Amino acid sequence: MENRNVSFIVNVEGAIYREGRWLLIRRGAAEEHAAGTLALVGGKVDADAGASGTRVLEEALRREIQEEVGLNVGERITYSHSTSFVTDRGDAVINAVFVCEWIGGEAAAVSPEEVAEILWLTAEEALKREDLPEWTRESLTLAERIVRNRETGGGR
Image (cartoon, rainbow, N blue to C red):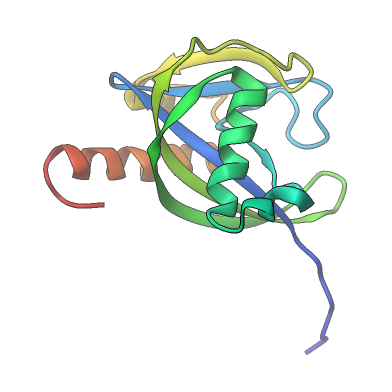
């Protein structure tokens, strides 16, 4: 077996929940990876993200959400799952997905080169869409399960 030294980019995404709906964005046409697809809000963890010392991924996610769509999310950011993938440019990425609750702001394409469209959809509406990539479908399904478990007292 070949031993390769691979460095990963760390990416975070937020499944943002508001009154029974999930925030999805259409990635801008100029995005390096998966341009034009429906996605959760997120982005790369910057090298200086660890300046606060703790909750590095969560703080990076808050920053990305604010920069891309202008929303504030609550303190309760729940880890959902992680995946790995290779970008269209060949970069290896570790992607960590978190469930977030909206607490303020109106979603807008603050960064139009990154966000071409804003959609608030129920899980049922989103999962019926043919333009929802499989990886976003999986993330949304897992996030929906976490929220439903909370609502029924099932924990996590």
